[in-house]
Length: 583
Image (cartoon, rainbow, N blue to C red; front, side):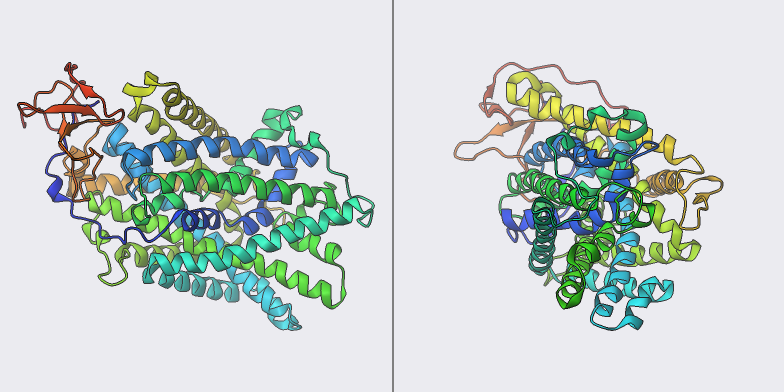
């Protein structure tokens, strides 16, 4: 019940996105596709099994389950904050409301830089698997191009351009493409898991195969510092992306409810998929460090390609199944390339609408109703970063997953804390509020804060990451993952200071002021709602001391819709915001 009243809401025009274009199913599809399940498992499962200095081994499914916990807790925070303010800026908007413009700006930048950097990794995978898939049809010369840096870079740039164009053409065509790509990907993953488990339980697997045990889901028998924490850093990455379902909230049919529900449903679906596939892979391949064993460093980059030939066998059928498995990873990476553009373009759109970045990024295509500058800009910047990383060293692409993990922990954790602080005055009005708006988001934020600190310390070690030749992957003698992660955030801090100097309105709280759950004016026949400054339907916000309450009118608590009779004290003034006397 904050006293802050938006100043000059007419300064922020309607964003103009196509409202009502997505339903719950479409939102869930976008959320799940954004995580790239097939690619994420192929590239991460080996690292989860290896863990840290002591392997996680058969406990890998337990690590995957444990990593789900903070993801679910933060998904709840997204759901609760989205109820109050369904803005496509998500963390940027909510953190600004809760903590002020500096924290909000850095939260928005965390989303942007994480998405831009992961695009380099996704483009590289999509480019390589394009040649792998085509080459699987009896064209070994084409398949060999999958290891050619120049060829994969060109193919990766083509994928970025193609997915940028699809996102530019409209949210509905983007969703339809995701239906096709995700459906194929999930079907192949489930087929892989069922095929492997049938072989294991029927006794037709390999001598080193294992019968699944319930104990595999208990990771707490492992050493936390040496195994659980390092494996968690990788496992968290495989869940990342479900928040795309919330970033398209202004384009859903029920923006206050549908996106939050889609986020929670997405995390649950991912948990089920990952648990089944992880158990199947561990059971069939085992956790040895030889052959197709998941602890074999040679398999870490793509465990499915290592397991596939042994699982499916030779002959025409085996060749076809391997081609389909490779195609599932290709569709996974390409789908995630597309859905990575969506949240970044909408975050920058929201930031521009509130004048936190150049206003050109708020432009909307008059026909397609999609962000123009934001979408195309995302594609161009991603291509530039991809070329830079590839030019420095293709091995540097290995550093991206860890560095992105730091950024994920940063802005997801910030969202958890923002939820607690935003609802701080009403947390204990009900048991549900205390759990869903207090305990869960706080626990998720604290867990991810620990992951960030732990990851930063370990990623800084020069020998944390080595390339295929056994050489340390470093920048200025420091672990590349730490440098890329922290460096990306520092670039944002510099850009923020430059923009603050040029256009200070946002940083003075004039376009997006701080607030928590507010009082609104009760108007007969009208249901009070939270409006956005750009929505065209702004409610009258009433100060907690009722100083601006019109005579004869009643103030309602926007959360409970109960009448408020007694005024409360105003909160302390924020020195960064204009004084109440206008100075």
